Amino acid sequence: MTKAYRGEEILFAVTIPDEESGETLVRPFNQTGGSKNISADAIDLDTKDLTGSDYGKVSQEISLEGIITEGDPFPDYVENAVRNKQFVEIYEINTRTKEAEKGSYMISNFERSFGNSEFATYSLSGTLNGSVTKETLTTIPDGAQNNDIATGTN
Image (tube, rainbow, N blue to C red; front, side, top):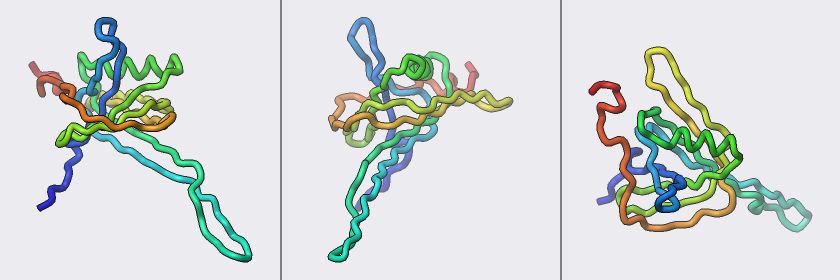
């Protein structure tokens, strides 16, 4: 019997430079959503002999949303990366298999929202620069350690 995936079984992580170890794989705390979109332009062929289409430019975009949480280095890191025109290495992780796909993304949009009587949130959109690679992780980075952190109750 096959088992369908739930959204929480796929998560995203980024590599953040670390003075001690070089870089650390960090899972943004309290992710609420994420998606990947792969699209291709079509090159149309229309002659007296045949018609058809072929692949043109292929692009991949990623989006990620979450709740801004105390102690999470992700929002500040991404915001600084955009300001400094730096690419961000993002992993898409299957938590069942620990298989991951990673790529270097240009962050085209990073937004922090602060609505009254709502959690502060972030959203990110990025476009793949180059290609992706696959790897199997030995561990999945920890997220928020305590649900009380997200709600502000101690």
